[in-house]
Length: 158
Image (tube, rainbow, N blue to C red):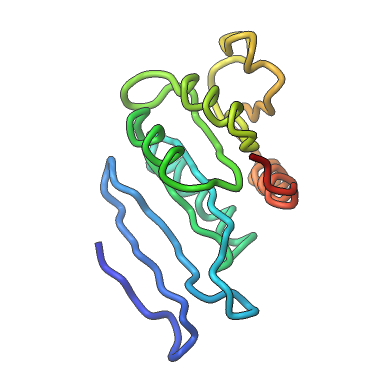
């Protein structure tokens, strides 16, 4: 991984890695008011092109104000979901290592807003998770950003 300073003295930097199974994150050390950002968005997607589409849509909406944590497997998603307080999550159902239903159940228990972004059908989702927002692929980036914007605007739970 490598860090770059984006702008002299702005305090904004990014750690970028575009390797399968690695985390791609965009960090803002200082927000507009000089405070660290607390917007963290987990994206679980094993198709790199779809992951980039989602990343681009969310990054365009939030810029340096958000940290994007992108993983491609169930094991990485479990680690990411427990390692940091998340603002929200976007989960593909079928990823490397299986289905994300256990991750979804954990997020639901923690009160973290999330949506499934999947080519699967809603009927494949276990009954306890069926009330969760479901964005069917191919998705509209407007639907992605609308969900994330609404989720981030919710008061923190837990």
